[in-house]
Length: 143
Image (cartoon, rainbow, N blue to C red; front, side, top):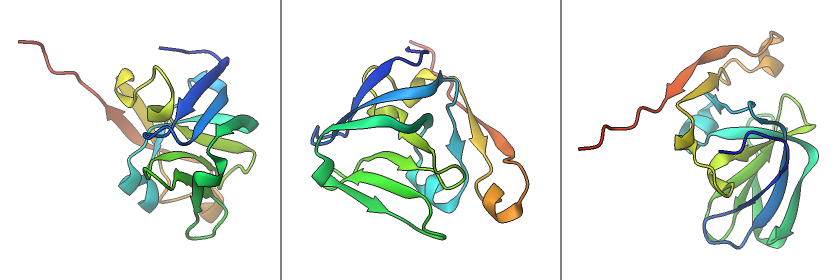
């Protein structure tokens, strides 16, 4: 599993949207979020600086969704519906990228994923982001 800041290739499920991304801290920035939207979406994300994502193909097929304050922009392939990335609300210079869209990576590659408290968002509370818990993946034993 890659753990560096070299560019990674990614795409949506149908391949309409293809991109490269340079992760700002490799996969050490991996996380989930408890906000209402992320709970329903269920994606595991890693971070990239603004300018760290280059859409190679399918930019016109990307659709965006905003909710609550409208600050965060969530991008999806309009063809297959897969969430590829979003511009973060707490830091508009950071993008979160769906790990499942990155070539050679899967959310199931990570035995533990920190879960951040998005219900009590730092922009709403004025307090630092709190870790809400840990999501664990324990593979079944082979028969």
